[in-house]
Image (cartoon, rainbow, N blue to C red; front, side, top):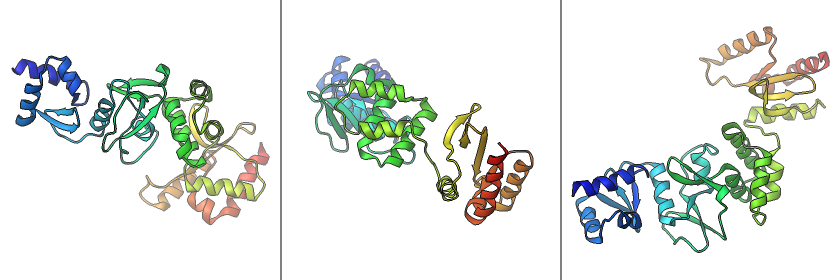
Length: 288
């Protein structure tokens, strides 16, 4: 008896503690034994035909695995939940979203189900045992629901964490030519992006004073930098004082950077001393 349950527990261990009714039957567990395990607590129903095995500790990965199992054999984790797992979206884990072919899957409370005519084999992979949409497919799925700035940031995170390129996105679009949001995604994938109010204000100052626009949040000399003018060989860092003991200590640190030849500006430089900041930046640009 214990050996049979050990087999189930082993399978569940590969699936974040979740198994499906069909998998139990495939492992030789009959309906009578399933009901007995439900009564004695070895199984706990999380969706119709989907069970937690053993522990009941909360886990968003277990929730996502359960959602995929509930969608059937062809289901994959997708959209916002997949974006969260792949570090494209921050914050609390969003509700499970799955994508299934139109002929598969049933409605499930608590799960957002997206049905597609077909799901190309190149549009999904497996991560920690969870079938999941690949990053370009996630971008394509998310494009219709995001504002342009938010979509640019999503594309930026895709590059930072997964080195996702416009070429990879175009290949995914070619596999899915009828997807909505394609023009928005094409505009976003190669665009510069700002990641803070400080960056937005700094770029506004440049426009106001007729200074050339930099590339933002790009790789330069192997490092990600805030602002970069490739033709000028100039890089500017816009620095937060969040990790300093005080604002005074942070400002002193930036002053030391400048004395060492680095161009760096703080919140105070941009918001409180814009004229001095523009004068310094104009001098750096003219020097090049």
